[in-house]
Image 1 (cartoon, rainbow, N blue to C red):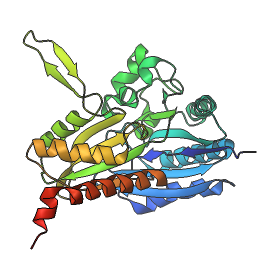
Image 2 (image 1 turned 60 degrees about the vertical axis):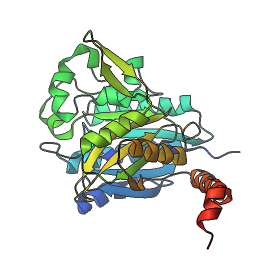
Image 3 (image 1 turned 45 degrees about the vertical axis):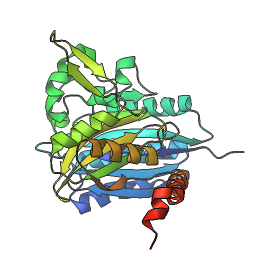
Length: 317
């Protein structure tokens, strides 16, 4: 019988205090049968991506303990970072790995959200496959306004949390809110640019991401112009510790847009705007097959370039 496994990838709003990060991540392994796979902090984003895996019930227990520990150690008052966020544990997705359907994963996410709302009194928004309504499927919609916009959001009946308090009390002011969902595997991928301009990085991200950009028409209305790549979300930001701007891309379905295509398109779009890509980095984990596919792709590109007449002439003595 196939083993039932799900992955959990909570993102916490702390990327600078290693003692707090380690203390929060450590609670995962207090649950028998859960394996901590990766802890990836970011100083500029002030955010850490934590990845663990196991059978559904133990993983949900580990997720609850992590959320509780983050609530204890992270105070959202004055939190600053380049990444959008609205809570101490900002987002907590469950990902089906084997023997578990997406529908089952969504049910586990709802159950976890209900427990977090009831026992920890944190406002919980369900997203992606676990969403209670269509407008909440998109994480960005749930997180719009970020932490600073929570007092207004919680007063809006249209954005009442799925679970937990609908008021910005002292406890919520410290913990913020939390998005819990069920989704497919996502690759968080940052592309480095030889510019410090967030505006230019955003322009390239808008070229690439599926949602594209809003363009104002002559009559004052706005037209949504789609970007080049499906299943890609993205923004541009400046990373102080590197001294450069980056494209921050989320590849939500690498069977549609794999990593190597996203990188290639980033190079093309950057070049069209007079900017050069200087490297890239992963945040968290990536399937091994995605790296093998990238190697095959670039080996083919290299072979094709080597076979071209211009390439052969350039190597002639």
